[in-house]
Length: 281
Image (cartoon, rainbow, N blue to C red; front, side, top):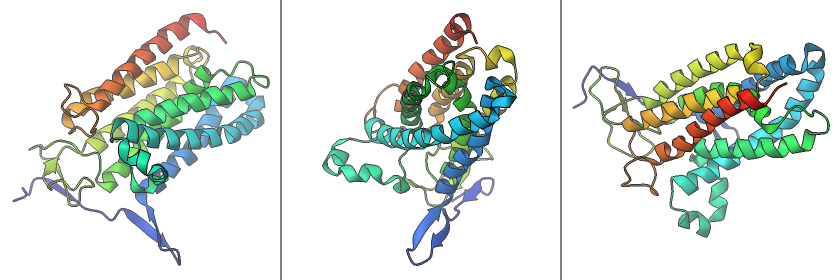
């Protein structure tokens, strides 16, 4: 019997269906797209402050071109990361086209992070003759600020989709998911998606404020370093109240999310301190 002190959550994940095609548009997809839409002007604002306010047109042009790289690298990285880190790859090797079915879920944040880094390295190489001081690390600095906001929206999407659930809890804010995506038993659970969403929103607010400071805006590696330490440090600890989601690391001392978060935190420390000393604007 479900306690009356908990919250029952069972929304319709479909916003509407496209007429004739009967194609469902999910809240997750809307929020994922909104993350990119809001991230664009945020990135332009930061890049304009870096290049100079007389270079806003140039900043918009760079952001336009970068958007394609970010969308492709984020989606591909997140999807490939999911089946490499959280599924047994044999199924996808036999049915490779299923990797493209992102509307069925299965996007890994660690895979997205790797994809974004690779995308920025390629993009920085393409524009190095136009803007010599816009290295891939500096691009990471500027991209990570809107990425934190996008992460907040994506976790809200996970909450609506009833996926990435927490462990059982007796706390009064425990949530009973009516139709969990993993088909588990509806019991009161930690709403870890909302914990993460609130934390990422706080990280965004902090990084946005710091991006106005010359000591962060013009010092390569400081914003991305702080982002990696905060986001993946938090991710490491919140995994303690999540069931293991990976079939690859099942039975391990740490979850797959924790194993993948450790190198991200180490990279963040290196970016923050080495960038502070070695790179000047």
